[in-house]
Image (tube, rainbow, N blue to C red; front, side):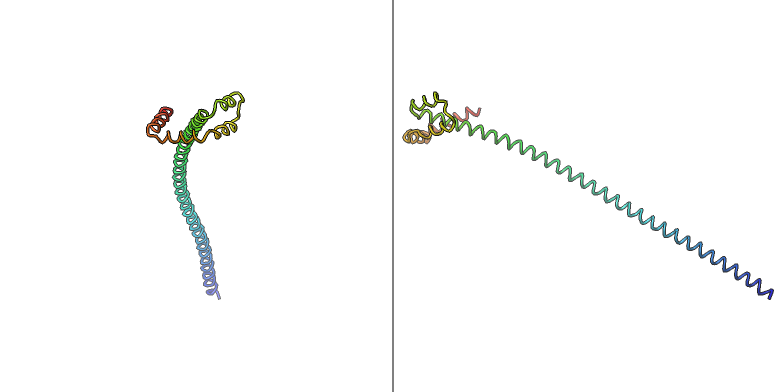
Length: 161
């Protein structure tokens, strides 16, 4: 039996070394898997960072376009406000000329009542609408006359200047 013991002892030692090497290989495999997982996560993070950078650039472009559009819209709004104000001025001047024409066409008694009575805007409108039809027809005919029409246009141009 003495020969069997050294042989068995040698087999036992080889078996232990083999098991130790298998544990080392398993540990190395776990480290490799862990390293591969970390590498995969690193690649994912890099990809996400690249995507975020692209989105940021895209958002900056959109913001620039929106800012430009807003500035353009503001300029258009200012122009429209100016046109609106000019239209109101023109309308007011036209209303004043029409009121003046109606007052000229009305009787002196109506003028005196208007001035002395401190009439309101509604009363002035009412008085203006009471002018004689004949006077209104004459005024329309005079406006249609080429010389009168040219004179009216010249007055409007003078007022605008």
